[in-house]
Length: 125
Image (cartoon, rainbow, N blue to C red; front, side):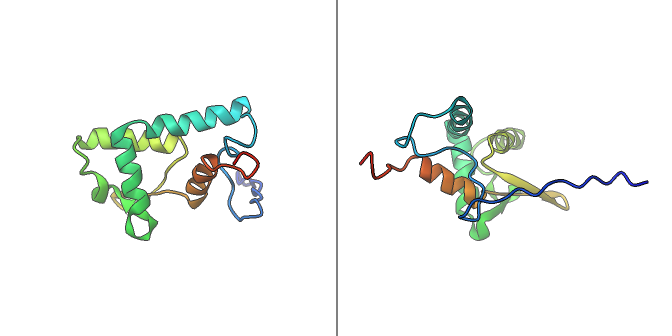
């Protein structure tokens, strides 16, 4: 008997990406869950070191960066790891271990959702 469990597939939106957050601020008031999600993202980016790390990953060639390439942000390596963990917990980064190094990437859907969140809808403009 196998312990294998089949997990359901997530259906992407029409754009091909699953939006991790919320509608534009000007579209309608947020639900409690949407506000919680957006606040978690903004709180994670509210720290200058985390913002630098997020920017370093997002702007790195190929859209991903090894922790060895982005750890020079003026804090110790354990502190870098702590901040990267917080960015992952907020849903802003994903990671993959390759040998002894961990590679981080910003999912395109996250950047798209963050941009959408801060975009004015035509009705509000």
